[in-house]
Image (cartoon, rainbow, N blue to C red):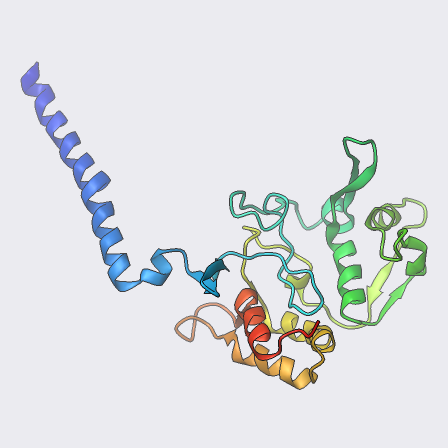
Amino acid sequence: MWQEILPGLRIKIFMTVLLGVVYPLAMTGVSQVLFPHKANGSLITSGGNVIGSEIIAQGFTKPEYFHPRPSSAGSGYDATSSGGTNLGPTSAKLIYGTTKMDDKKQEVVDFDGISLRIVHYCVENDIPYESSAPLDRFSDANGGLDDVKLIKAFNDDKAPLVFTPKAPIPADAVTGSASGLDPHITPDSARAQAPRVAKARGIPIEQAKQVIADYTDGPDLGLLGEPRVNVLRLNLALDRRFPVKH
């Protein structure tokens, strides 16, 4: 019996050591020598502190910064919970959003929806639009947009809110990636945000567009993928060149 078992056991031990120990150590050593930056997470530092990674998106909401794609990773941009919405293109939830009751029995946003994202994108970036109802009907106590009211208006069976931008909006500006952690936006999305960023920083729009051009990456090897802009690197460049005056 042992004559039959031992050969298989030896092979198992050999392959375990080879593929479970030797190979991972060899690949780790090679990557640390040839690609140390990428092997260690493509981390970005500023002032001696790690502030993010080139390959993981993080949220920016202030007007002086370019904003990334929407994220459904966890509560948003959660690197420990990568994922998309898994909603189909005809999903009413994806298009119009949904609300829910929280622990305090207050109605809150469950999922924002593409329609709500379009409203915010137009308002934030001064993109002209047509609306079947004035947006001031959906204001909150602070004068901002009440997302719950807007979502309910979009889902109104009798008279749903119709909101139509008068200028094209880049698809990636209002849709998330499959991972929810895509660190890039398209150059079109960046240029659409340039007037807002330039105004917030008190600089000519041409300077904001020049930073976009400087940080636009072309297709890999000149063939693979599309032109793209890394949002974190772009915003860091803005802070270096045109710091916000408080």
